[in-house]
Image 1 (tube, rainbow, N blue to C red):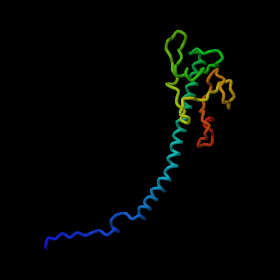
Image 2: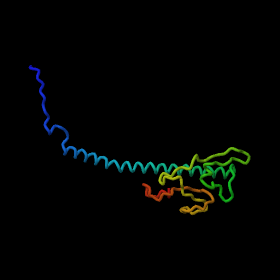
Image 3: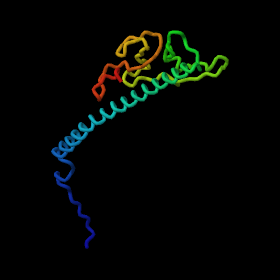
Image 4: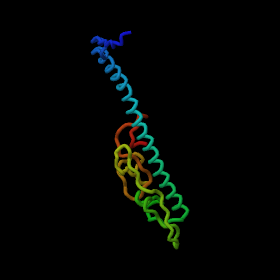
Length: 161
């Protein structure tokens, strides 16, 4: 053996990806990413709907607990409120238990943000309002609903949940 090093040059067809291979790879990536986008969008909407349902359930539960304490005369209520809280802030700020006790009970830590509108503003209904009313009488809070007029994946408007 003579100890020579033989260098072999690559031909241009072996140097890398051809233009055709590059176009095919991009097309495959485009098809895969475009099929994933609807799934991601649906997942985001579904998570927001779950959060809306949870927040509504929490506020309605707080209203019911307030009403139960009012009906059992454990908290003082204003005349004309029918034993329901006068507003959502009352559920956050709390009310005193009993006549001589300084102990306060709070029903909510904060007014939650509506995931559909992005604001902590909710539609309110009083006992005196019609069940499908969009204007609040302002005397008490019997029910809460989202102010969003968008339609959910179940076909109902979020304001009807």
